[in-house]
Image (cartoon, rainbow, N blue to C red; front, side, top):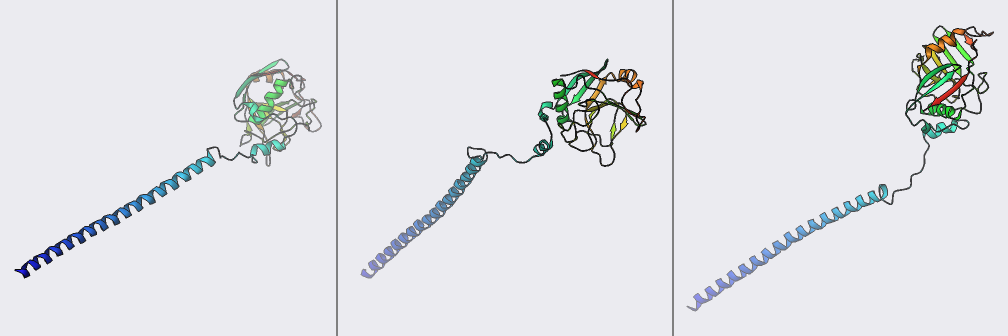
Amino acid sequence: MASSKNQEREAREARDRLTRYNARQAVHTHQVKRRKRDNLWAVGAVVVIAALATVAQVYYFTAGPGTPAPTPSASASADAESQNVGDVPSADVSEYRTWTGELTLNDVALSISLDGAAAPQAVASFVTDIQSGYYTGKACHRLFVDTGVGLIQCGSLNGDGATDTSYSYGPVENAPADGNYVTGTIAIANSGTSYSNGRQFFIVFDDSLLGGEGSEGYSVIGTVTMGLDQLESQIVAGGITPSADSTTDGAPVIPTTITAATIQ
């Protein structure tokens, strides 16, 4: 009997030890899993915090209060302005829009339309000169009529067609690639280089091929919308005063002056 009781006690103690061992193993396994989970949460939190910090820093220095103050840099516009001579108005004066007005040569009223979007710098200059009264009283010193050319040129400072060295600008804008200046075109005259545009302009009354190899052409600023027939019949038809150099390019026989100029 004593031996049987001892065996039962030993068996019971063995079961108790196994139960306690299993319990400890369960606790250990749970702790390991918890540590792994906690580590994953910690790593995730660090990643999120780092990402938020990066976003905040980027925002601060690109859109927020830490945005660096802009510094001016060289631009095509600035380069162009640096090559202008005299009191050349900003291209912004053109308002990049269509302007309408009237030029009167002697008694011939020409309705005009200017394209400030296509040739902003040239239109700004032309509009400013009309508004200041520069053109009123200026002569149209040149009439050019030949095969493939028909134009009248106006606006020189002294009425003789000489270049005004105190005023020039560029670049050439809106010049037709094929050199064909169609009837009604108003364009700015130049002396052959991009920054030699001035106050002189010409009106095309017959399709004209102008320029040539090496020429950048002429800034087309707009068109004559009404009055070309009267220009031809009352001024061009009078003919050209021939010179020693040409019988097709010279002063008009009928002295021609810009008697009025308006724009809006």
